[in-house]
Image (cartoon, rainbow, N blue to C red; front, side, top):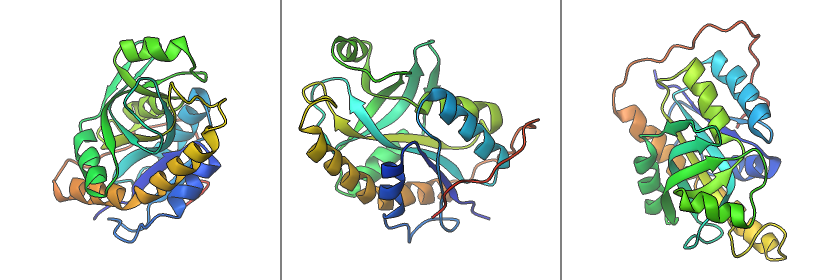
Length: 226
């Protein structure tokens, strides 16, 4: 039996954009859409509780992010083929190329590369440093969510996408952030059919069943579902 997609985002505007997308082609029925809250610690705890419940066909971390180098515009999508953190941990994502292809086929500009998870808003020279280290974009949650996945359901297929809101040329403090944010919101909503296509493709390829690992913490159900 095909299991639904678990979609995690941090913020209410992200959830609003995702809920408004066209999920009609979703494999396994309507996805489970839940907010993790902002930041590594909060997101990691929330993701662990959700993954401990189990019953998902794949994990998708979706929302907004910031580009750290040139060549990426607001409203374009970063698909992470790996996620790193400040402690040197790396989470490779083998399903990333298929998601990037699905997004391009849906008419969205997608960039495949490294996403860095930070514990603060990254600005100025720090962006340049992260870009020099190989990152394309930065967020504040993905690495913690993937660490929870590695602990609870390591075989669960996963992908991460971040729609770019701000760039080194137009950081969050600039007036141009408002139109850039609206462009990113529309792109995230428009990405939904590509997300369902990616999940259907995953289900077309047989894989071993995933089994949640034992946990001593009580399980909780998603806050939001669509």
